[in-house]
Amino acid sequence: ALGDSKKSVTIDEKYGKGYKRLSKCNKILDDLDLALKYIETAQKLDPSDKTCSEEIKTLKILKQYDNDIKNLLKNDNFKQALQIIEKY
Image (tube, rainbow, N blue to C red; front, side, top):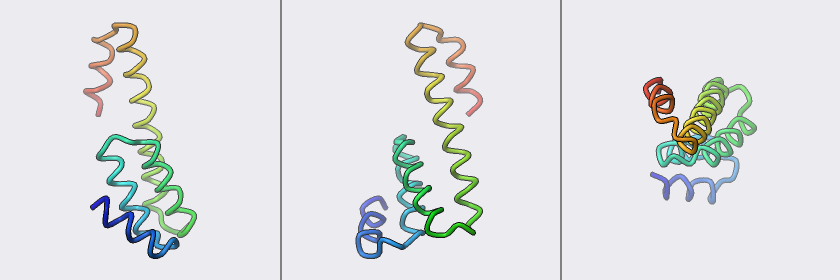
C-alpha cells in the first residue's frame, strides 16, 4: 500500500487521496511526523475534506502521547507510561 501510494502522488502531485493513504501507511508504521506531513498536504489540496482535519487532530494527540511516553520511560516512570498506553 505504501509503494502504491507513493507512486500515485509521483504520477499526480495533486492527488489528495494518495497523500491520505500515505498518511495512513505512515501512521501504521508509527512515523507520526511523516503521517502528519502527508495529511496536511492532503488538506491543502482539498480544504473542504473534513476527514483531513479530524485526522490532523488525531495525529497531534498521538504525537503528544508518544512524546509523553518516551519522556516517562527515560525517567523510569513505567507505571505512568503504562497508564498513558492504556488510554490508546
